[in-house]
Image (cartoon, rainbow, N blue to C red):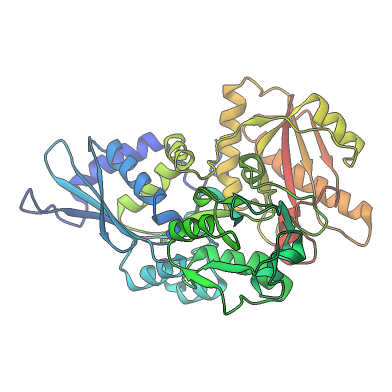
Length: 453
């Protein structure tokens, strides 16, 4: 297996063994008193991740290391301590502070946390200010631990079923201020939004507001807690809010369309492929040369099958590869219709670094997951089809060629493991999943789908 497939090629079982050895040599000494907690790891950042998922992953890691019954205790507003005793009776502790994605990068800079949890990619300004820590966009530093969908939620009795991104932006900018304008009952629109520290808000601002040249209306009520926002929307018939997928709860999630794409529900299938217009990645960031073995152990545990099962159990979208049927539609190219009728699509799309033919950090892990799926389902022998897509070019033939070259880039990586696809296709700018008016949309449309017979 080439090291190009995954940034951390060491199997999780080896990591666990090394972690056990690290008990004896970790620079943070064991406490003299059995009642004194040994602080193993500090996580700071996203409320979306930190409210439930990060503590659950921390508890899973402690169980792997012999802690039979890890407990979670609230240690402050949006702060959790996960602790338990190992077989020797030593009290082990991991802390999680969930005050917003931006606070995680501040904590890395200050040395007050080893892991930053973020519900958005690191910003260029943050990367520059943290350059002394190493390249935080490198494959060893940036870890996609889960997928999530940014749901636009309303009261369950609201008759509005779908909106496009332009309408959502106009609503949250205060330009559409009555539900009657959208086919709903007469009544003022009340806006609910996460606070400025939130990666959820940063994602909403980037995908919705900024893409339409708008700003959040000053009348919006702001919340640090995702749970509280969702509860308030579900109780207010005139409300609209945005939230991570696990926090929809009793509210109703609307179907969302981007320019040039059909309206899509915030479904697990469409989020797993990142086709849903408001899908997003959830991250852990750590220094590339982080010396705390627990930090590296937690990100590797999160990427493992057991860790991804915890992701799914907490309402997010795990990155396990699964087969799914796609309905044949007259709007699809004929070759795609034949594929949909005869084969199954896998729940993974390969995407690339901006301005590059190199696979991005998520794709590096996804290659290994795909290989594991093919082996487990005995589909290693020419049963795979790779379908490349892209954004519009002045010449459609050039767009088709570039999309096929992307599929060929994935084929090259699979060939290193002895996997030869049955076919590769390049469909150019067809079947966009995002608007091509913005860089982020064009980057999202440059993808490779995976199908199996």
